[in-house]
Length: 581
Image (tube, helix red, strand yellow):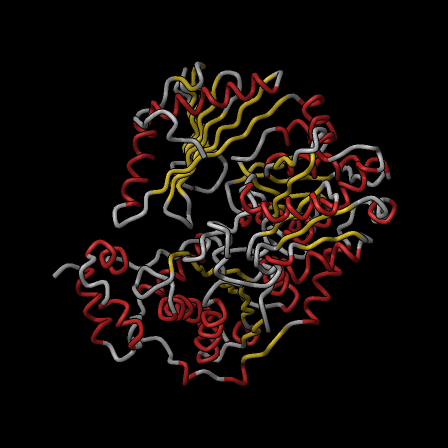
């Protein structure tokens, strides 16, 4: 009998599994591929936790796999002693279907181990969960969310005591405990929960969080000075941002806030949205309609767990244009440095952090202002590690951390990307430029004129199904073994393999270390500095490609990007146009 058949049989025969789940599985009896996908393995617990489609099965998000993962977390905390158990774990959730039930089940398992639990009384932004870990002195935090994935998905994010996601070592320890636990027989039942250890948290923590966010204002009075004319449309895309984003806008003095009412109420089905992702223009359709009605030049959208934020702004022709994550990061960097410099408040030891797949315009901006810039692997836990090192040494003032996928962090109150503080800063920045008779699009154009034209594109290939992971691994291996000799008509001069930890000069063969933790990422650089990066997603069945190009004109940078993408398609044996986002 095959592994998936054995696992399926055990679920169908177990008294632990409810009858609804069993009926769901019986209805799939003729769909071998689906059953193989659901039962051939368990979800891999990575440094970001878990993420998968919801449904019955060992490789799916459901009450049993959530409890199984939490048992691993609980067993790790058990080894840390009574003090760690008393410090407790804070649990949050977003608006997705089943998030409340999953959060409750996690609380039951932890409390059965004698671990104190702080359970949010409703949906909250992911950054508030990170803040809560730090503010309450918890040993860990758990957030039930699948971020911006389609509605069929849910997920489980683990945070450690500093408010960031765990190191690989800690994640591996949790994984080991999960692997040693029988999902059907070794996990405490709901009836074993110790209710006296489960404490509800809410409004008081909200207020402390919002006060910390508000203190990150750069020009505190900018919005009030521009309040007569500044109009902002906001949508939380049915998610957790509805609670805090409009509130922080009001607190900084924004008077004209227009919310997309159809998307303000939490709804895990995300009606009308294939993906509730503020990276996609389709997410802004209702926002654009409202903006046209009220005469707003700025639309802000946050994803369901309110850690990412996307923006559309009106250009000179009156057309709304998306500001990409790379562009917004550059705008925020330049704005923060400029505004602080004008007030003689830019620290001499200021530093910023970005990921290796994020626009190199940041390097030019930081160099212009004399600010140290650090490049790290994708994931805010790596940004948090840089902050931790500076806190331990007592040197350096953190200005901003961000990544190309629409995540930004300012301040030291949390250790994850935060759409609440980002939305506040974006409104403040819009006000700052409006007082100079400029829009955000004008400000972006000014950056290009000053620093050169940077084009950043990403593309992704989904490989769902039982052999999806194998196909993705094969694509990465192909690029490792057959390094492209050229990309975009230029010679490839270096390759960084972050899995082996080596940077190799293609011409000389010389090698040196990357200086970063190991990760399955390949980074190719051409003779003029254009970059192509390949990286399998840690949370979705896909491989992502990033093309970072620069030119003296917009057309030149765009052409370089397209040419690099075509070369990459050829190197992978893909049809032309396969890597169009």
